[in-house]
Image (cartoon, rainbow, N blue to C red; front, side, top):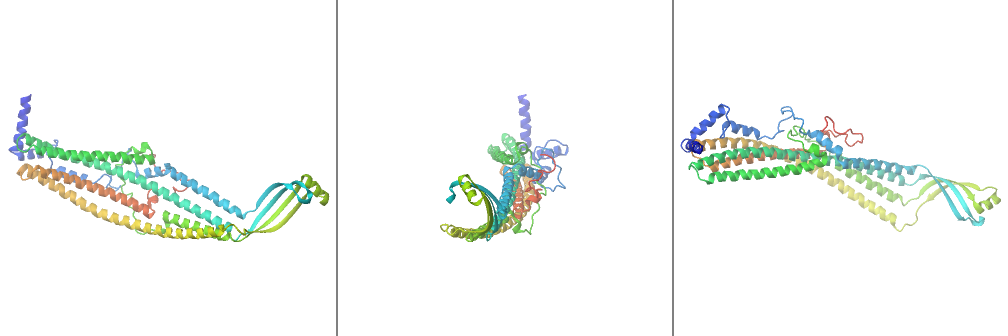
Amino acid sequence: MTKHVLRLSGVLAWMLVVSPTLLWSGTAAAQSSGAVEATPSLTRAKAVALTARPPGWQSPETSSPADDEQLDWRQTVQLAVARYPSIAGARSAIDQQASLVDAARSGYLPRVQAEVTSGQQGEFGTGQVATVGLSQMLYDFGKTRSAVAREQAAGEREAAELLLAIDAVIEQTGQALIEIHRYEVLLDTFATQIEALGRVEEITRLRAEAGAATRSDPLQARARVEAVEAKRSAARAQIGQWRSRLQTYVGAEAAARSVSAGPGALLDHTQRDVDIDGLPALQVARAQRAEAEALLRNARAQRYPTISLEANANHRLGTAGERYEGVYGRRSYNNALISVRSDLYRGGAVGAQARASASALEVADEQLRTERLLALDALRTQQARIDGLEERIEVLDRRVTSIVETRELYWDQYLSLGTRNVLDLLNAEQEIGQSTEDLHNARHDLWLAQLEHLLASGAARAVFGLETAAERTWPGPSGAQL
């Protein structure tokens, strides 16, 4: 048996040393007959060029339908919004603020009070007085109106912050999906690269055993393989980290599924004309300004009196009541009056509150300007990033095609002519792997930029079917259950 093995190894070595053209021709014949490939060929080069595009690159019209185990990106984001507790908390804050508006509006309505006082009742001696009183505010120089305006502005702020919370969940979930997809694609790329470098290692090993090459050639190839294996291990670790992030938003069962279907054309909805003032961040800033303005009006109104209509029904009890009844023939008496009340002195608190509210209004004005600048900057930055990445993808696509053709020529020159060494083959394989990796990364960076642009333009909720997610009656994820 040992002799047969040695004889077979000798034959292979003779083919590699004496006539590498025969080996190359035999490989081509094996390809035409459906046999397993032993060396790279034009068919494999074309296959690598095609697999340089990540899954999900094509539009939904041309891509194959995803199987049941793959996550639908739109439904995944909807599930995250439905599950994440900050969204429910923001809705409750809106309900709380609506109740505070009702409480502020109660200042327009009459107040009915009841009290019992006990003690010395003047010349009637000791006793008690039971009183039922009604008070109706007639005019307060805007105190109640400004209080209502302040609570309404706070309600608008809470509603805008709910939209910001939804956008934050969209951003985190979308980013996790993109990154998981990125590293899943890179794992496939690394596997292809390891296979290609393994073929180089095998041929160099056979040539070294036959004495046609140095022993350093297969060692160099093995070092390149191990380098790619290290990158593959790092990619697996990244997938684990991003799946943990996704699990936070959608749960363990959904996070464990594949995202290889890609977003398709879901993120291709960039808008050039955006209503800046309609963005949630601008809505929050405007609501904060309205709050500060209402507080300023309220602080200034505190300098003026409150005019009210008051009516009281009193009934005397105890010894004082008996004496009162002896004098007036009854224990009860009523009164009605117009009341004008104002604080004459509060230690300077009114003026200090007015100055503080004026400063708060200035802060809110500057914050509104800042948010507008930030919104414009985000839109311009992400649009420029999208344009740059689209151009980069075109260049990288041509680069992958060119280096694959170069690799084919290097193999032919190495096997047939002997004008190329193993370092040229390894560099070509590494260049293919790196350029393909760069192409994948650029495509996923483009998806991230498109997602950020959707968020910056306020269109992300519409794209992911979350236009009504801010409403308490929102039904949750649509379509099939995840």
